[in-house]
Image (cartoon, rainbow, N blue to C red; front, top):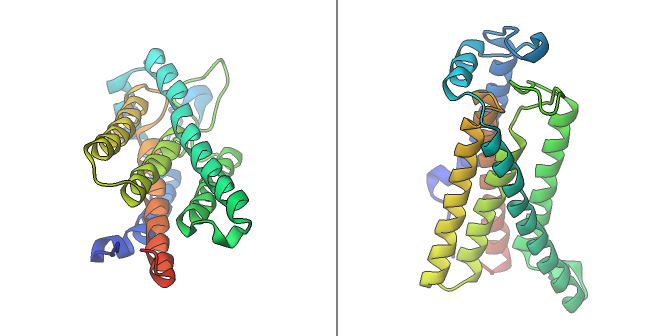
Length: 222
């Protein structure tokens, strides 16, 4: 049976609160017009310094953009798993509770992405194909750090603790780390965009994990 440790019990709400505070800081502290076309950027000194440090690497941007299809494929895989269970068991409530919650969780991630596309907090430090795009929080970082931990969690819950399972989990963690680092140094995001995405995705994931443990415990599955 999976159990909460004291840190994990409160990690989700605390990280989400941290994301809210971070977003307010990004909007209000040290705001300067250092972005393309004179766009204002919060925590400008830190963001400007880091952007000058990394420069812009379009090849890395393109690579991480295409690799963003990997977590989308994982979402589709779990969606297909849930649909197969629904068809076979002929009831939504007989689908595994962690898969149902996973669908809700992915839906919340998508809603978060759409919200920040419509309500821009920051714009990218560079124009992409001549277009000024919203950049906070980093959508690719949000997607990767929201999905890859769920893959690890599902492997841990559903697969035996074999060498193959351990390698798969290690590869998922390595991929997530590579994607965050790649997005960070590619120069298409401000540093605060990446930090915001890490806080939001971490908060959402730990809330999902806590919900699984609670509901599965009630159902006698965990």
